Length: 395
Ligand SMILES: [Fe+2]
Image (cartoon, rainbow, N blue to C red; front, side, top):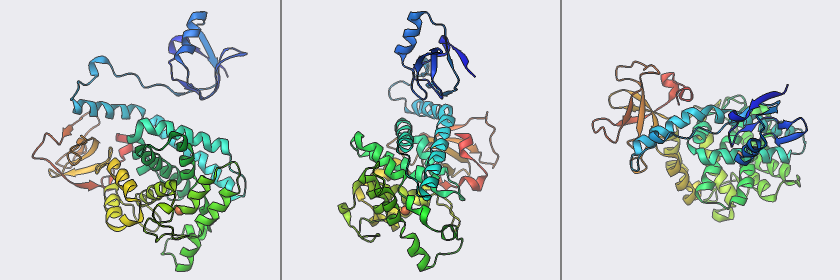
């Protein structure tokens, strides 16, 4: 059913799920296309007071920060708190976008499993939407990629998480923007070969036998074959499916390639892949919190990765990422809401459980800037499950 929307409710940047019409035959803007301020000006000039659409608003620009709220130069704490408040306002929109990407890739993987061609337009759209949302909102996407998973339906979540981490690395090394779309698609599809591995092996709760592990190790070749025969996808996308388990030290598979013999996309995806897998619970092991995953990568698997890319990735993640939980020496537990770049060990936190073990009410906001509190410090990162806390509901 068509709904009328007043001109005064239209904002530049808004997107609708269906086309917006001026008259039944005169379209103002297509579905999922941002409304331009010139479109709104045009309507004003023509004296048009309302437009019609059968869709819903799927994106509305975040209100600008009010002038008196704007931090003065150097007022970092205020800026961090403001950024956090912005995160609070926009998180649902990006969570929805994340879920949509997972659903989209889920159906692409199901199709591919049954030997159907990959819908190139669909995967390009998923990649495009992801990249344009991730780049201005890295914090929230790092949070989503670090926390979202489904033990019983691991692959679609893993695919999107790896794409998110890969885009963040690629952006840091200032990859040619023309390559970003293909990098994202290659990251989304890197494990497509897993759809050919028997479910019995993938869902096994016990340790895999050597024979079973050897079957899993075939997934890069399966993936490569599935993608290489698809002429609509470029060769660098199939290559990542083939090379993402190669290791910088030459100890990977299937071809034991070494160093820069492994292509750049695959070196990026390898880091994103390992980090995502470690930070998620699998049916055969518990998850690592991000702090422990970073420590583990640095101590045990450092030589597996391109050192320059690994350094960039880890420094971008920050020791205590936004929305992670930390315990203080006072016994209070807080959620990190931001940090000064030169004081990563003393972030700004919002207290969730006070020093007496009592959970604070939503309204009792206590923000502590550890850079100003010399008597307080972090004793360790903690797992949200241990405290029955769902940080996403708190961010
Ligand atoms: Fe893989």
